[in-house]
Image 1 (cartoon, rainbow, N blue to C red):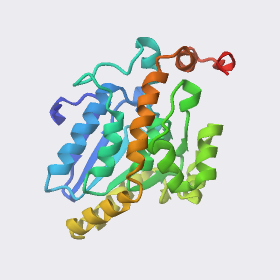
Image 2: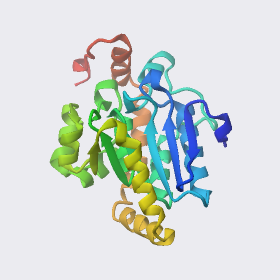
Image 3: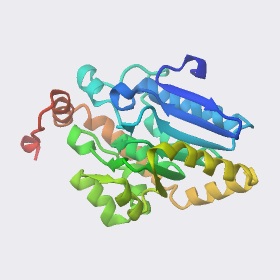
Image 4: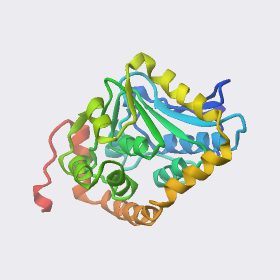
Length: 266
């Protein structure tokens, strides 16, 4: 397991107020994730899980442009994959389950765009606070990808079927005020107050019995845990799809800054 001192794509910090802050640190790529990023995020969450000093976890992105823009489509177009990983596996599905399973509340502090796979990450967090300039949406089908597991089915639990289908089928972006109105985020604050608000929530929860918070989180998750099975089927399907010419057209069009042409695949 990669240790925090060896991180290149993520930073990990534990503060005196019982909060671990995990920051995706690839601002030059809009904090998009590659295989190494996912490995480091898994390691960071594991460290937060076992650290008795930590009562809650904040997940955010470096800079003020992006929380996370999803998978690094440019790298995928250039190399055919999301890069090397510790075990030879791209474990984004495992990261999704980690955010759900860690027995401590996870707060997403959305400091810019939360798009594609980055949108899924914030949806899976227990709470989301967003900066006023944050934007939300999906991009997967446009770039030759999709998340038909938690990214779709659990999203429908959060915002309702009609909104979830709107997000996935139209691929539009939505501002923070709209996201709050839809129930996609809990609160919107000025950018300069984003991390302060997330830490305030973490301090509040740190005063409560950790066993109670753990059981509450497990209880909330139990109602949607069957989606985990659907997620495994969906990611197996995605693994097949991304190796097709149809998916490559989306990734290549993104890298070449042109509109994709999916008409031949209908």
